[in-house]
Image (cartoon, rainbow, N blue to C red):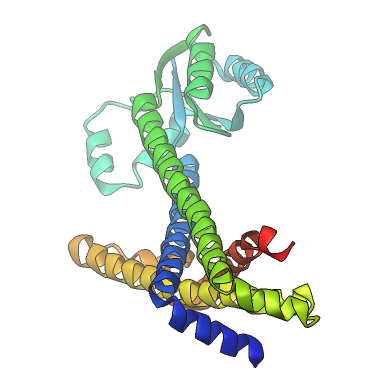
Length: 292
C-alpha cells in the first residue's frame, strides 16, 4: 500500500508531467498496435495474392507434353517456384467453360482455341525472382507467350512493403520516445525528492525500499497508458471497419485480426503488457547517480 500512496502523491505533485508520460505511452502503444495490425494484414494480403497469382507460360502447337515436362524439370531446378504444373489445352478449355459467359465465347470458335500452358507459382514474388523465371522461359524453344502481370504485382508488393516500413519506423520512434519520457519524468520526481531520499538513506532505508515506489509509478503509468492505447486503437479500428463496410460493402471482420473476440481480449492483454513494460523500463533507466 505504501508504494501506491507514494505513486498517488507523486502524481499530485507532478500531475502535468505524469499526464505527458502516460500520453506518450498511449501514443507508443497505439503506434505499436497499429503496426502489428498493419503488418499482419499486409502479410495476409500478400500471402493471399501469392496463392492466386500465377505466371502462365503459353506453348505453341509444336511443343508436345514430353518437351513441356523437360522444361518444367529445368525450371524446378532453379529453386524459385513453389509449384509448376502443365495444363493441357483440354483441361484449360474445361476450366474456361465453367463460366457461362466464357462458355458462350468458346462456342463462337471452331474447336478449342486454347494452347497448352505451364502455370508457375513462385515462392516469393520479388522483382529478381519474376525476372529470372520469365527470362528462363523466354529462352526456351516452344514458348509462345508469357503472361504474369509482373509490373502490377511488383508495384503492389513494393507499396505494401513501404507501408510496413513506415509504420514500423513510426512505432519504433514512439517506443524509444515513451521510454525516454517516462525515464526523464520519474528522474525529475526523484530529483525533486532528493532530500527525502537522502534522509531515508541516512536512517538506514535500503535502496530497494526507496526505489520501489518509483518503479511502481512507472508501471502504473504504463498500465494506464496501455489501457488507454488499446481503447484508442479499438475505437479507430472499429470506426474504420464500419466505414469500409458502409462505403464498399466489404466486411473485414472475416479476417481473424479484426474479429471482436480477438481484438478485445488478446489485444487488450498485449497492450497492457506493452504499456507496463515501457513504464517499467523507463523507471529503471531513470535510477542512476542519485542512488549512488
